[in-house]
Each structure stands twice: as structure tokens, then as C-alpha cells.
Length: 201
Length: 280
Image 1 (cartoon, helix red, strand yellow):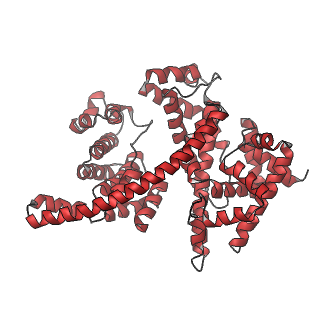
Image 2 (image 1 turned 60 degrees about the vertical axis):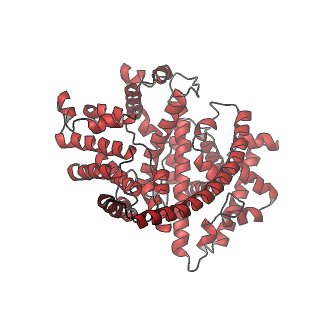
Image 3 (image 1 turned 90 degrees about the horizontal axis):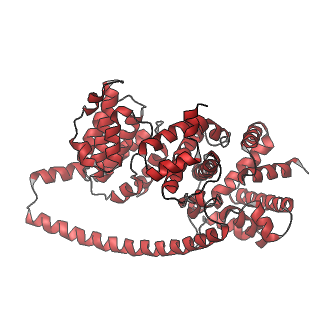
């Protein structure tokens, strides 16, 4: 990597460019960042998916990269972030990864709804996509959650709605990390089985 | 420990950022080659897709917050609760606004009828109305999907136009010479650069709420630029939005239907917008 390229990957450079709000330098920073890290970032998130074609996955990654760069830059300009490491790439990767998986899961949900629509002989698919009144979930998801035991339901909510890490949950429940993973795994299986059952799969 | 549980641990570690770059790459390689792991990974994504609520999706900015890099967890949780309250408040405002808009629409109908009775609309206005409106209000969709164009890879020869556009100096761009970039010396095909200039001008007209002029500019871009290039895809998408802004839903749908079968970077937005327009 040339010295010039490296310069644009440094946190100190980013801070200076944000402080000066220099658009051309921001562009240069992005160009150098993409050259150095885009492929590496993509290799760390993209994998095959049975329902989403590879080119859509690549497009999602491209969109996620642009969105996360924009969020990162805006937060930098507004002085909302403090990066302790010499290079900002690690920080940016976390944002990118989360953005990518949020966009991907949105795509998966869309694809699932379309599948249900195509397979349904009556209007059952509506139950899948229509939101339950007073609930943030669709009717079918709410029904599945209500069929689960309170412990399993709580685990699923913590992990996927509140987006807690396994360590966060371990702290809350005061049991070992592996036990939490096993409990969660069982809860996930119940969720999937109920989902398949309700959809006659 | 059985391989299924072992996989669950790996998946949890991957999503909780407990792997370094090399481990993440190796993990995804394994997902590609291991059927059981692949199924478990896809199942994880499926569950996430069902349990992520609109709040999870609408707050992509959370990506910065929840990474635990700006604020401590306590503040984050407070801000999350606050967001829930704000969500309820936003919903209430939305309901009030909808009622207000309905009432406004009703009064608008009366106003239009009165104007028509007076027969004081000029011929050109009528022509414009005929061309740019098909009685379907499309302003809401336009507002929802319109986002300012940004790029980091446009040609440097036309950066003056781009910078003026980005800095909201729309009139500067609109009034500038179409071939102003030539003063800087041509390094690329003239049509290629001209396509960008016309694109910026179209974008500026659109930002100035002059969709008719912007459509003309975008149409030039579509004629002179290479199919599949940035100016082409951008002109295609923004002309769909411009037709919406002008109130012509059918024209917009026509363009969006083309986009949905292309490799446009706006494909997803186009499909979504199309769905909204078709279900309206």
C-alpha cells in the first residue's frame, strides 16, 4: 500500500477531513477506502443463499457500503463518533455488516412473502404479511410467539427484537454462555417448526 | 458437543462480532461448503427477517449507536425507549395528518370546481395539466422515494456542476453552459461528459420543483449515454420520479417497469415504488 493510500485510511485523516468538511478530500478518502477494503468487507458478509441470487447479494452489499459510508461520514462531521484505533476501517466494518444484514433480511422477508403469495391457493398469505393490530409483527409471527413458552418467547425477543448479544443475555439470566446458546437454539427450532406448521410446509 | 450446537455457537459469534476478519471469512467459506451450517445460517436469517420490526429497519442509524462505539449501553437503552415513545407520537401525528389531508383534499375539489366554473384557466395551463397530471396524487410517493443524488465517482471534468448541485446552487448549474467542461480540456468522450452535465441539470430542475424541464434533460441523457452506465440508470430513475412529481403516474410506472428488469442500482427502490403505485 502506498503512503498516500494509507494516509486516507487513518482515523486522524478522517477527523481532519470531517473537521474541514472538505468534499473533495471526502471523495478521495472514499476512493482509497474502496480500493483497499471493499473486497475484504464483501468477503466477510456475502455467502450463498438458496433464495437470493448472487447478483442481488452483491447489490445489497454495494448499497450497504454506500449507506454505511454516508452514516459514518455524517456522524464524523457531526462529531458523534470517537475512534480509538489508528485506522477507521474496523469501526466502519461493524456499521457495514449490520447494514448489510438488515438489508438482506428485508430482502428475505420480501422473498418469503412473494413465495407465500405464489403458493397460496386462497388468501392465507395475507396472514403472513398483514400486521397484527397493536403488534409490530405480522399476524402469523405474533401467533407463533404467543404459542411459545414465556421463557422461549423472552429469549427470542431479547435476541432478535432488542438485538442483544449472547453476552448481554448471559448477564441478564446469570447462566453460562453455552447454555444460553442451547436454549436459544431450541427456541429457534420451535419458532421454525411452528412457522412451517402454520404454513403447511 | 454435537455439530449443530457447535454451528449455533459459530453463528452467534459471527453476528456478535466475536471473530476477526480472517475468522469471519473462514466461517463464511464453511457456510458455503457445509450443508448443515448453511441451513442453520439461512434459518437464522429467516428468523431475523420475521422478527426485525419496522423499528429495526427504519433506524439504520442504530448501526452506529448499537455498535457500542458512541454511547454507553445505558444511554442506548434510554434512547431506544424514547424512540418507542416517539414512534407512538409519530403514529398519532400521522393519523392527525391523514385526517387533515383528507379534509384538505375535499376542500381542494371544491376549489378546482370553482376555478373551472370561472373558466379563467389559460390554454397552456390546461395543456400542461393534461400532460402532467392524471388525477392521481403522486406527491406522497415522490416525497417518500426522492433522495438527492450523490456519487463519489463522477468524472472530475464535471465536478463543478456536481459540487454546485450538491451545495444546492441549482441556478448556477441550470444557467451554466452545457459544454462548460470543455474549458478544462477533454479527457473523455464528449457525449459521456455531456450526459453527466444534462443529468445534473435535470437533477437541479427537479430540485427546483420543475419536473417538466427535468424530464427533458433526463430524456437527453437517455438518448446520448451508454445503456447501463451511471448517467443512464440515474436519468431513468429520476425521470420516473420527475413524472411522479408532475403527477403522471402512468408514465412513471412505464419507466419503473423497465427498471425492474434491469441492473439499475435503483432496482429495489423501483420495485418497491412500483408495488406502492400499483396497490394504491
